[in-house]
Length: 267
Image 1 (cartoon, helix red, strand yellow):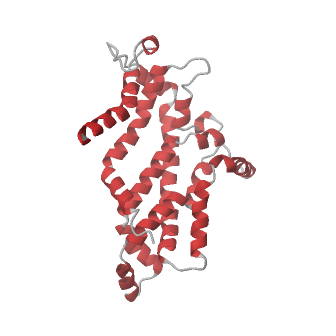
Image 2 (image 1 turned 90 degrees about the vertical axis):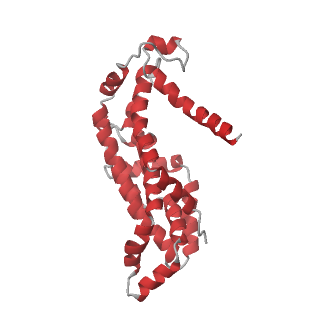
Image 3 (image 1 turned 135 degrees about the vertical axis):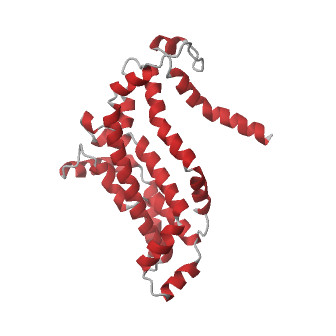
């Protein structure tokens, strides 16, 4: 029964991807007339080069990779340092500051949109990548919580032995905690990569000119006001979602391990 349930679940979750794949090989008329899961014969493979050329794929890919790389580096550096402080260091009102940080996760992004946009506009950051990258260097509440839980699960004896040997707090963090935190760090990197790769809201607000657009904006432009070219849209979607699938399956072991370990030691 468990196998049957898993098989049904796998088919259910794979259905949208199969629909995308089948539609990506259809002409406009075939996409309108044929069943969503019906495969065309012959395949119309011209959708792929046509979609990539229409959306200026290589330029959008470069812009997206710049934003993704900056966000991954920024989140890993800032969130790991703050998480170590909350997990292992003592300072006044630590519990209050931690609760205050967690409360920011309940604040909707739209609630701070206008003040942030006005601030970035006044300092000349609109139509640059800075509003989409610089905030990541100030930490992320969810990722700080994830790493803090992992750091608290590590044996305190390692830290005590390092202090006896004269190691500083930063040395303990750099030489002991970071090497042991590979699963959690990879998990955070995957989450950040997926969010930055798929992010449409931020680039749509702050980027004005086509030379600054990301892949998410390029994909959204296939949705016309009166009609949608489904073959081109699905072909572009397949190309854009493929790196996410590759990253997930390559790092699946670390992803699962990091998720499991992040729930330990929640003192």
